[in-house]
Every structure is written in C-alpha cells, then in structure tokens.
Length: 369
Image 1: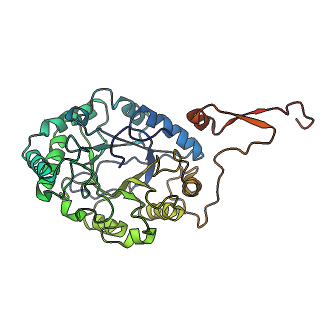
Image 2 (image 1 turned 90 degrees about the vertical axis):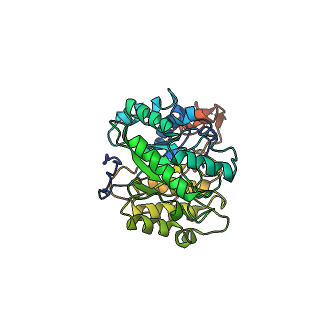
Image 3 (image 1 turned 90 degrees about the horizontal axis):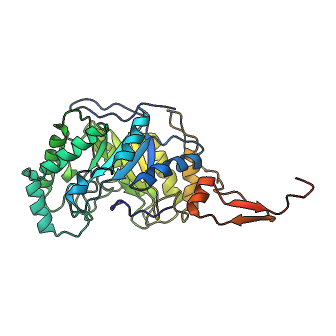
C-alpha cells in the first residue's frame, strides 16, 4: 500500500541517506522527507508543486514502486527509472527510494501453498538473475545508492512476497536477493526491511532476516485500525515503540517509507502525532502516501490533517527538527474570491500549478483600483 504503481489518482542542504556498511554503526542523519505522488514522471513533477504548497520546503526524497505483475517489470524495464535517475543526479543531498517486489504476480491472490513453493525456489537461487539485472540497471543509470525497500509489508497478507506461509524460506530468500544485488560492481545499495505496524498476519520479528543483510529497519504505519488512537499505535504490540526499540537493539536506523491517514478519516490527532514522533526519533527518511484516502495535498477529503501537515512542514529546510506546534494554525489552500470575481474552471492540475482558481474580475474600472 500503495500496492500497484499507477493506482494512485491524479490529484538547507544536508547529508543524503548513505548506505550503511555491513558491521558499521549507522550514521545519524536529519530526517529527510518526501511523498509518494505517482509511480512515473508525473510523480516528480508533483514534487515541485507539493514543495510550493509547503512554502518552498525541500522534498529531498523521491519514492516509487516497481510493478510486481511480471519479472520483466521487477527487473526495472528500460525507460521506467530514467526520470528518477535524472532527479537524483541533480543534487547530492537527494535520496531515491524504490520498493522492489520479491515475486511476480505480487497482487494476484496467490495461495499460501504456492507462495511457500515460490519462496523455497527463491531461497535456492532460481530468481537470482532477475535481481542481478535490476542491480546492473540501477548502477548503469547512476543510481547505485538507491534505498531498496525489498518485500515490504511482508507480515501481512496482501502480497505474494509475504512471509507468513514459510518464514524461514522467506528470510533465506531475502538474504539471497541482497547478496546477489550486492555482488554487482559499483553498487552502494541500502536495504530497508519494512513490515506493517502491528501484528498483522504474523509478528514481524519472525520475518527479520538478520543484521548482515538489513541496513534500515523501516515500518509502514497508516492510521488504522478504525478507532485506534495514535497513543495506542505507539504502545500496541509490534507498534511504533516496539519498532524503535527493535531497531536500537539491532544497531540500525529507522525509516517510514509509507504512512498516512486511513480508516479513521480526516484525523488531525494522528497527523500531529506522527510528525512529532518522527521529529523525536529521527528516521533517516519518511515519505507520506499522498493520495486518497491517505494523503493531505492531492486528497481534498482531509482538510484538518492537511492543515496540520502544512503548518508543521511549511518552509522546512533547516537541518534541525522543527518543533510540532501544539495547536497548528489553519492555512487556506486557495485564495478567497471577492464577490466581483468569476472563477474560471481550468482543470484540477492547472489550478494546482497556479495555487488556486484563476479569477476574472468585473470591477476593473472601479475607483479603488
């Protein structure tokens, strides 16, 4: 979640996230942030618009997903990653995050026995060549320092690359993929192991493949289930506090590759809580999932949470975390039109670009002009 690339509807410079070498202590870094806005080049264009909406705040993280329908897409088909590579190369302080499925037919409801069979084949090396191809393409595109979110939300039931049917084979397969991709000359990949918050189908620590092949311990943390307040999301079994504690015990930095609103609707308390949590615990990066029902910019259904997100992050460029205000002040998202103004309907994305509706005035000859 987001699961299928393309499934989303249309609307101070600091050190980048660096790969953590095996056996090395992770380097503390200011939490860079960004958002998932679309899987293709339009997602990059929207990053500039979102930055404008946030008063020029720097979005130093770009995030997309490889389609998991077939192996040719998991290999990073030619042309798919080019725009992202161009964006990454423009500045040294940028981070490119790429979700990589571990198996094809990743959202086709594959049965547990078939998942178990595929995981065992993967653990034996049957699919190594696909991941070697992906690694070689990333290096060729000058994306050798990509943060790879491999097999995300493995503790759930959504994806074919889920862990539950055979945790031991899943871990062996993860280790095999990482070893294969690290064997490609020139690579400096960072591997982000990212379960869902909470127990889900299986406790996520049972899927941990080991410190040698994990660089970042991430978590996808949406506002769910229904009725669960943010403080319980922190303290629940396998929740946010357990995530931070687990990462500390393993000497790894944390991340939040996916987070956003969900079953509790336009929840300002959740938005305020997550932003404060991340300022306190300093993940290497976070990327909001910004489309309905999760988002705050492309989704107009969440105005209260949108006000919180915008008031906290507007203009954020300083490397020191900005305190989260106790009571965020609302910021209007579009200008108030005078009664003598007739708005023109130019379409949703033109209005995003302009920052609101274009107004045609009829009082241009008035004395106060």
